[in-house]
Length: 578
Image 1 (cartoon, one colour):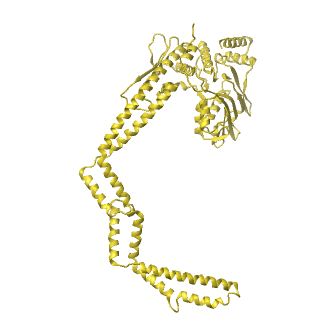
Image 2 (cartoon, rainbow, N blue to C red):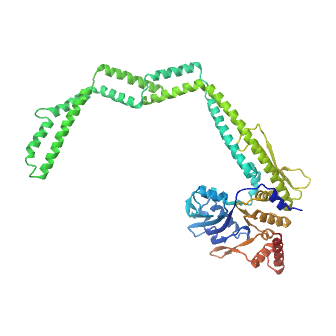
Image 3 (cartoon, rainbow, N blue to C red):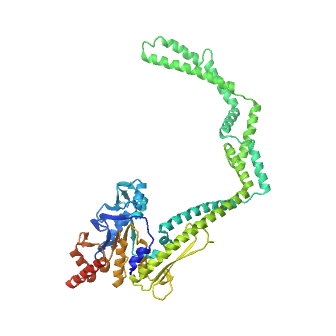
């Protein structure tokens, strides 16, 4: 039994466990030149067509913003104060998007509603299922919902990161890559610890002796901050002891004088006034205040007497404190610290002395750990290499089988994977990857960047997309004029390839090619109507008759019975192949 290249690609491409997401509704309000537009979509392949400049790519741009793209006030339609964009997706059970929503506590059944509003100030707000979210959250979810492929996406094929992504999109490779990254992180942490320890020059015997001297010097005097505070307070008290004692004694003399002391006078005044307090409430208030003052004076006298009895103006004690404080300040200047922080200096010196004595032992331990972790990393990198080899062989075979359909008869595509087990570890493993291609029969494959033209790169990119998505229920695929620059039978093949991408899922394609549009399950026409004052853009789902006219226009520009007949023939042929 003969097997078509498309069927072969579907069978040989690695399977994915990721279920998909279907875009069911796209609403646009006051965006670019669109005042209001509602687009209802179904599963399968949808073609978006229309005259050049009609605004077809605006739909893709709006979807890009809903998926977390950067926005500014220039996105707002002239005369409006804000742009509003909405997209609704239907999610398959077990889909990556549904898992993300569940983990983020944003799930609302099996559907997902995205909304974004861009104000004339350039600021924007976003919602997922009615809950306000950040732009990064919108981007994370967007990666699970839609893959957008622009006109120049094929240029990414020349970048190493994109080339490895082709391999590591496979679930088995992805799991092995995560393991490699984890082993690399462990190895890297020990490698950095060794480098930091190596930067610490070993201390000589003299340096160790000096360090020991500094520790001994501080151990006898370093104090806790609170103890130093008490000592400093006592020192200041003794330093000004004469003045303090004189002040205490003179105040006590005022409070304790037999005839003129404040307390005596207050009590006499209270006695004289007390007999009248029943006659006037202000007098009563004064008596109460004077009584409280008399009590306060008594308490003050008691406190002053206690303070005076505690003060020791012993010259010997003052000299002892003077020597201690002087020593502490000298050591603080020496170590460029505050006197209250000398205990912290001592702890750091002790730690440095201990580490200096064990530096070589610690280095040896770390080097042994590094060797062990490097072995773990190499083993993980080996498993990743084996998984990538299987993926590379399957993908190379599938893409090569599709190249003849894209006008490259006898073309060969090869993902050349090599492993360098002595390479410096990296998060990506030990592999070197080169994309090789031959676009002409009999020519050996060479580097993609050397032999492929821009048009060939675009077609190879499309073949890779088809081969990668065959056999899996991927997120919604959006293609923005990826068929530019091709025609003839190649255009027919591109249409069939896009049709196969949408099989079991959903694909949207902005296209100028009738051969591509006829392969779609549904076709939308974007129409721009301009007057001197306004520009209106509308999008319509075409009926069978309208679709014939649109395909006829795309074929030749002018409508005639001949062009309509040709359009009907293309549509019928595409339906038969479908």
